[in-house]
Structures are given as C-alpha cells and as structure tokens.
Amino acid sequence: MGLFDKLFGSTTKDSKTKLRDQFKDEKYFKNEIIRFTEIINDLSAQPNLTAFNYWSISSKFQRIISLRFSAGSPVSELVKDYGPALDNYVKGWEEKEATYADILLMISLGILFEISTEDFNRLVTYMEKTDNNKQLDNWRPDSLLWFLLNSRAKTENKGEGILFPPVYQPLYEITRLPKEEAEKAAADYMNNWYKMHKDDPWFNAHLKDRGYGGYWAWEVAAVVKVMGLDDSSFKDHPYYPYDMVHWKD
Image 1 (cartoon, rainbow, N blue to C red):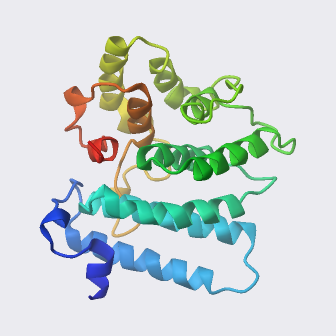
Image 2 (cartoon, rainbow, N blue to C red):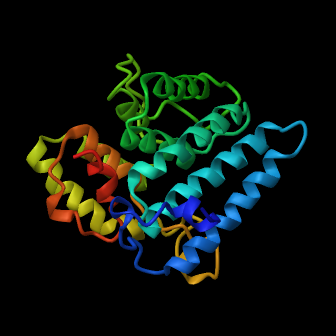
C-alpha cells in the first residue's frame, strides 16, 4: 500500500466518497496532508519537546483531520487522528497561554467523534486547569465550552458568559431555545457563519496556494449533535460538516 493509500484509504466500496470542499481539488489536499505529516514527523523527532512543540504537533493533527474531511475521507477513518491530537494537546497546556479556538475545536471534535469517557474527561481536566489559571488575565469560564462539556461530563460549572460574544453569543443562545426554534436559529447562524469569522487568521485562506484546510463549523455541528436537532434544512450548507454529525446513523 502506497503513501496515498495510507492517507486516504483503499479503493474499497466503503471508502469511496466525493470531495466535500468547494474550493480545492483532491491533489491539493493530498499534497497538504503529506506536508503536514512531514512536519509532524520532524517535530516529533526533536529531543526535549516543549509544551509549545506538543501544541504545535496537535494543531497539525487537527489540520489533517480537516484536510481529510474536506477531501472526502469517511469520518470513521478520521477518528484515529484525534487520539494523537488529544495526547499532544494536553501535553501542550501552558500557564501563560490559552487559545479559545483550539479548545472549542478539540471539544467539538471530541463530541462529534464520540470519544471515550476517559478521553473526554481529559478535556474536562484541561478546561478546569485553564479556568483556574490565575495567570490568564482576560480568561473566565466560558458558557458555550461548558455547555458542550456538560453534555457528557455533567459538572457543576455553567460558565460565566461568552469570551468572544460577537461570534459565539448567538450560538450559545441557540442552546437555550426550544428544539424547533433552535433548528431555525441554527440554520440562520450557518448563513452568517463565514462572515462572522472575517477577523480570524484563516478567513479567505482558500485564496492561497497552501495552508487552507477547509471551512467547517465544527462547533455548530457539536451543538446540533448535543441538542439532537434536525439539521436537514441546512445539511447541504457548504460550511456545515453534516457527515460528522451523522456518521454513525
């Protein structure tokens, strides 16, 4: 089996899927996956890895998950990349650093992949350490993060508001609505999702020759999964990872 086969699976009936991304082709995603795999190998071979090194390795595994999903890989084949992403992520915890987007992504993927209780509890511990870290001046327990964590952990922590309200307050408000209203609000949120992220570093990344992994609203999918919403009205939205919600259906 060649390198491409290892990355994308064999050509069996079960592994044949179409490209999910609208901007790049299969060749682009293959090349990017190879590039990030090589970066992971180089980083992992370094002696005396620092917390930043572990975080960086985790971020590359996160990117590979997005790349492979964009390229059309079955979700069941992506789960194996989450394990090393999580292992390195928890090793990369630092007292003076906390990145909301990374934490939200790891929690959302953990929910979508239906990871084990043991692994999910590692996310809870990571979040508790971050919330209790006195060196983070502008950090406080976030209500959206804890809504997602409490879908399985059932802690007493409800959060103290939303850290980035322009983007995530509307999503959190969806979690407080009755199902039918939440389904309509989720569809509306998806219609505004991309432009709400105009200040994110990945915005318009598809215009570049490399570095683009796909635009996927993982956190919206996680909320849909937790709430058991009917997402049929926006299943074909180009930024909604429908297959991640329904891969075990």
